[in-house]
Image 1 (cartoon, one colour):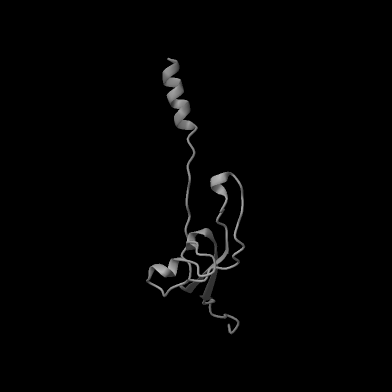
Image 2: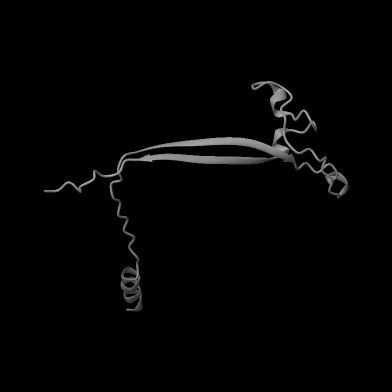
Length: 105
Protein backbone atom coordinates (compact mmCIF):
# COMPACT_ATOMS: atom_id res chain seq x y z
CA UNK A 1 0.00 0.00 0.00
CA UNK A 2 2.79 2.46 0.83
CA UNK A 3 4.62 1.71 -2.42
CA UNK A 4 1.69 2.97 -4.51
CA UNK A 5 1.43 6.11 -2.40
CA UNK A 6 5.14 6.83 -2.85
CA UNK A 7 4.75 6.46 -6.62
CA UNK A 8 1.86 8.95 -6.69
CA UNK A 9 3.77 11.39 -4.49
CA UNK A 10 6.80 11.13 -6.78
CA UNK A 11 4.66 11.93 -9.82
CA UNK A 12 3.08 14.99 -8.21
CA UNK A 13 6.39 16.40 -7.01
CA UNK A 14 8.06 16.47 -10.42
CA UNK A 15 8.89 19.93 -11.64
CA UNK A 16 8.18 21.14 -15.11
CA UNK A 17 10.45 23.45 -16.95
CA UNK A 18 8.92 25.58 -19.67
CA UNK A 19 11.11 27.42 -22.13
CA UNK A 20 9.51 30.34 -23.91
CA UNK A 21 11.37 31.67 -26.89
CA UNK A 22 10.45 34.77 -28.74
CA UNK A 23 11.52 35.55 -32.21
CA UNK A 24 14.34 38.07 -32.13
CA UNK A 25 14.79 40.58 -34.94
CA UNK A 26 17.52 39.67 -37.39
CA UNK A 27 20.88 40.91 -36.17
CA UNK A 28 24.22 41.13 -37.77
CA UNK A 29 26.88 40.25 -35.21
CA UNK A 30 30.59 40.00 -35.64
CA UNK A 31 32.92 38.52 -33.04
CA UNK A 32 36.50 39.76 -33.09
CA UNK A 33 39.04 37.80 -31.09
CA UNK A 34 42.65 38.66 -30.60
CA UNK A 35 45.03 36.35 -28.76
CA UNK A 36 48.15 37.63 -27.05
CA UNK A 37 50.66 35.63 -25.03
CA UNK A 38 52.00 37.49 -22.00
CA UNK A 39 54.64 36.70 -19.40
CA UNK A 40 56.30 33.29 -19.16
CA UNK A 41 55.13 31.18 -16.22
CA UNK A 42 57.52 28.25 -16.57
CA UNK A 43 58.91 27.16 -13.22
CA UNK A 44 62.58 26.43 -13.89
CA UNK A 45 63.19 25.09 -10.37
CA UNK A 46 60.27 22.65 -10.21
CA UNK A 47 62.57 19.61 -10.30
CA UNK A 48 64.24 20.67 -7.02
CA UNK A 49 61.03 21.83 -5.31
CA UNK A 50 61.52 25.56 -5.76
CA UNK A 51 59.89 28.30 -7.77
CA UNK A 52 61.90 30.37 -10.24
CA UNK A 53 60.59 32.11 -13.36
CA UNK A 54 62.85 33.60 -16.02
CA UNK A 55 61.27 37.06 -16.19
CA UNK A 56 60.26 36.91 -19.86
CA UNK A 57 57.49 39.49 -20.19
CA UNK A 58 55.97 38.62 -23.58
CA UNK A 59 56.03 35.77 -26.09
CA UNK A 60 57.86 36.54 -29.32
CA UNK A 61 57.81 33.78 -31.93
CA UNK A 62 61.26 32.76 -33.11
CA UNK A 63 59.98 31.56 -36.50
CA UNK A 64 57.34 32.17 -39.11
CA UNK A 65 53.75 30.93 -38.78
CA UNK A 66 53.49 27.26 -39.71
CA UNK A 67 57.03 26.35 -38.62
CA UNK A 68 58.13 24.78 -35.35
CA UNK A 69 59.83 28.05 -34.43
CA UNK A 70 56.45 29.75 -34.30
CA UNK A 71 55.76 27.94 -31.01
CA UNK A 72 59.14 28.73 -29.39
CA UNK A 73 59.78 32.07 -27.67
CA UNK A 74 62.75 33.98 -29.07
CA UNK A 75 63.35 35.69 -25.71
CA UNK A 76 63.36 32.76 -23.27
CA UNK A 77 63.31 29.63 -25.44
CA UNK A 78 60.16 28.23 -23.79
CA UNK A 79 57.17 26.77 -25.62
CA UNK A 80 54.24 29.13 -26.19
CA UNK A 81 52.07 27.13 -23.75
CA UNK A 82 54.19 28.37 -20.82
CA UNK A 83 53.15 31.96 -21.55
CA UNK A 84 49.92 33.40 -20.13
CA UNK A 85 47.22 33.39 -22.81
CA UNK A 86 45.17 36.57 -22.94
CA UNK A 87 42.08 36.57 -25.16
CA UNK A 88 40.30 39.78 -25.98
CA UNK A 89 36.82 39.29 -27.40
CA UNK A 90 34.81 42.10 -28.91
CA UNK A 91 31.28 41.54 -30.14
CA UNK A 92 29.98 44.09 -32.59
CA UNK A 93 26.23 43.93 -33.07
CA UNK A 94 24.10 45.87 -35.48
CA UNK A 95 20.47 45.72 -34.40
CA UNK A 96 17.66 46.98 -36.56
CA UNK A 97 15.11 48.90 -34.54
CA UNK A 98 11.37 48.78 -35.32
CA UNK A 99 10.00 51.46 -37.59
CA UNK A 100 9.05 54.70 -35.94
CA UNK A 101 5.26 54.87 -35.66
CA UNK A 102 5.01 58.55 -34.68
CA UNK A 103 3.46 59.52 -38.05
CA UNK A 104 0.00 58.16 -37.24
CA UNK A 105 -3.00 60.02 -38.61
